[in-house]
Image 1 (cartoon, rainbow, N blue to C red):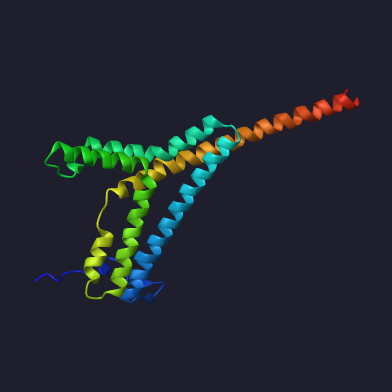
Image 2: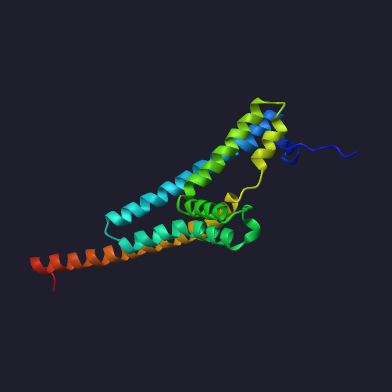
Length: 199
């Protein structure tokens, strides 16, 4: 007879030689990990919005728009992948059901941060449930580890947004640095000519 393995059995039982209890494993591998992931995601999203805002305030509309498009790019690819593969569709029996499903996916594309945070909130909820309810611990941990389509977006996000965004913002900073250097040099030259020091 095969012994049923717990979700916790798939996680390391020790950290630096210290054996973890079941509750400590839940804290380390589920609650703290999900909290850190959500904090990093919120920081990334907030910094992206701040950069877009600063570009618009500085009058760099092209850079602001390109930054915003990069923020939406992983969500757009996720949307295209989901709607182009019927095997990923939720089963619908009527055309109105399919239209609702498509509308839901379009809303998910436009308001992608809500769905990501919903995923993290759901994982935190079930992690706390696993921590506090020993009888329903396995069901709660299975709910935490249950795959979600949102993870496809989270997989695409570093490659299609974060890395290109870093290179774009670095390029913008270097371009502004060069421009500021040229303006500073020009202003210095003008000042020397006006004072008669420039030969």
